[in-house]
Length: 362
Image (tube, rainbow, N blue to C red; front, side):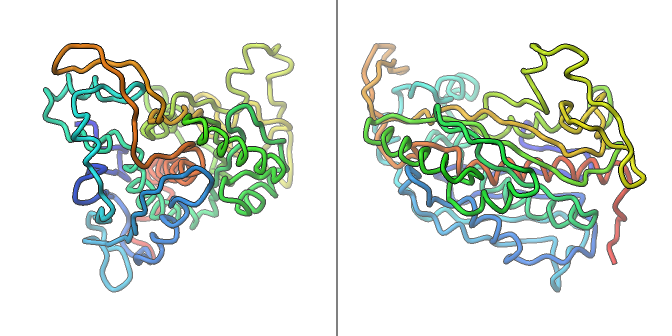
């Protein structure tokens, strides 16, 4: 019941971490959009392991389009995309089936589904489900690019290492120069060393990702219960390990005066703009036309090799557990494309709700 997102541009996610495949069904995409597997694959490749401390699980992540595309264009029918899981090793999960992994959804899922849930690799609660999000995001990106909307994300913090703020115009290009997706190259080196140290210590790290959307039209959002920032936050919280989302100045507004927080209006090249962007491109749940800025807090990877006290839910007895296996020491770099995807998907849905995209593209 909770696996579908969106009103017009809708996603239905399916698959488990150690199941046969991961996939997504995208409905509501206008007919006539040029689309092939290579368009989606290039986005998926950005999510693959490669940075320091990323998983040793090496899935090919080959994208297949099952329906909704014919002769290189979308047909208007639901688009089903999937990737077959190949590199699966469920032995350690079966061995520790009833030992609750601290920081994971093992207990909540066991209770909610009566123990029938697929627990291997975290099942539906694994970060691997974001592979399907990125597939859907590739389609959304192509659609909103027709309105010159550009979405990108970058790492601004890992552990205690924070990146220095960069000029927005240069951030996307600079972030692409390292596997951590950090626009501050000096900070990226420190982050890499920190991740390597955490891995040696059998520990993990979290961090913060900033998402940016440029050229978003004024007026997107449906107050009060389907407002722009609310729906965007909902989509971002669907990314496993996300524990916080803030828009614009976010929690910093609590320490500001109104005279400091208010974004003063101005006119630039015949359009209304604001001199600052503490609102992060959203006021009253409606996009302002300024860049949409969000920051996403990602918790440290819950799977760590250190011995931790826990409970065997079958025996109802205390035990110790070392979570062995192939895990990311820091999930932040691989979550960057997922943040981009969920931003693109949300914006795309609002664009269609606003009637800014025809049902048949020419």
